[in-house]
Length: 513
Image (tube, rainbow, N blue to C red; front, side, top):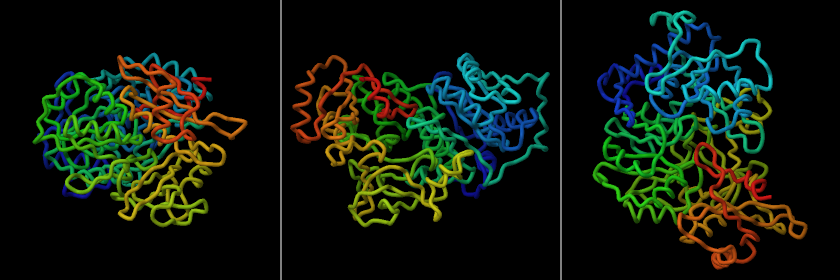
């Protein structure tokens, strides 16, 4: 981490560029372009000067519509550098949701990659409330960045550029909205720097590291773990436009990466790919998994095949991603647990929010300097989520063992309650995933007259594998018993996922009804 304390991301970037101007921060594999810290500072400053020259309101929302790459990275940096709130658009959310986001955030300008232009125009047409002034669209080359219309926008001089402080809102990121309309999470510069610091401390990142970012940076994992993690540690970042199981290992080797962050789905894809990787094992320290629970069977198979430790973690949009992490080897890791708190206080609470002891199931609470400022224009939701003494209610169920490791047992809203018994969908997922033919699995509840709810599940099989529903149900029964075994198992070509790769369990019932 940089030695000088930084109160804002603008300070952080400026400090690193002054210490290591020629060191490389960002590399884009498709073009093999490498951007130094000084070059990154120059690009961020230029974007900030143009945004201020556009006459935006103080702290205005600047939406970013782009796949991963140089344009998206510098659009984020330039927006926060100028004291505006970066509002990344989830490119797989659908135009109705994007229309809501653009309206609710009161976006004033959209930095839009060329291939996102049609989608953005459809989203503007789908806005539920027409604004007094429509957001201005500035087109972006995915590698070179914004194309400013200098007849309409005159950039201010660098000397006149306003600088944000620790309390300035740097990021407005919307939750996936699987249980209702999306909520806009407000994260300050201090929140974002704390989030990046938590990653650095847990994974011992320093300026010699180079991280691979294969997750979209319009999602909190990609943005706060790899972008903020490398900014805080002054280390390198490699960012391909998209994940490719075929090219992944070659990119890791070519660009000398020492770590990468992925989600369980991507680990499953790498396991299912037949590519034999050429790895620099002296350089590649670890991989990390987040955004959804990592099935223990995938964890064990991956480490056995590739001899790379997976550090399972857990995070939320509301906390700037990571709140829990397993320690790095040789310290003890516990498979099936996302680890212990780094930079956060973690507690397990009962229904009345009383703190529970070891090995008692309750709601997971977190408190720390990375916890959000609140939800945009949703004071009631904010009050429900953050207690008077600063604990954020995650909505996740779990227990803490005597060593402080958390074991997540499910989402409160996803619990299957069959005949009065609580059944965690994850337990069923893991039983199904133990079968060698199953690539992905997700259990869910269906209303039932006899038991209130019954268990069902959807699976995706590995390419070339076949198994009947009866055979798979029998396999499941042998693992977890008949009571928890799904009454029906549906075979799908793919399971619905959000931008982080997490299966959207709440959508499955409607898909198979």
